[in-house]
Structures are given as C-alpha cells and as structure tokens.
Image (cartoon, rainbow, N blue to C red):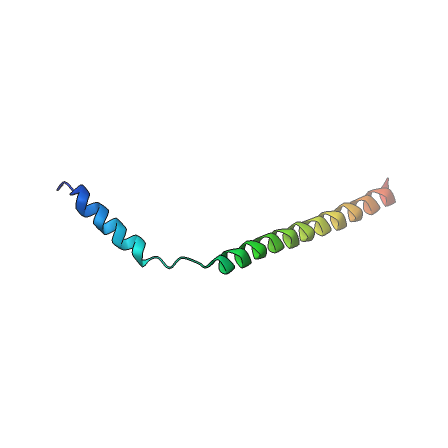
Length: 65
C-alpha cells in the first residue's frame, strides 16, 4: 500500500470543499422552519391517533366491564 502524501491530501481535500454548494441563510432558515412544522404536525398526528385508540379502548372496556 503506497503512503499518501499529506500535502497532496490537503490539496485534494481543499479542492473537494471548494466544490460544495453552501446553502444561503434564507435556505437554512426555511429548512429549519419546515423541520419544526413537520415535527409539530407529526406530534399532533400521533397524539390524535393515541387519543382515538385510548378512547376506543375505554369505551370497549366499559361496555364489557
């Protein structure tokens, strides 16, 4: 296995980082807001599903209990 030249590695790493398209501040903000919105909607969905299942089970158990 050939040894890598540290200087060559750093040059290649720097060239790869230069190819990265960094998001704008607005894109980061909008993406962050969308993550929070989707997390809230997911939490609300699972709360409602849990509430409906719990209510259904309580009705079912009270009918036979």
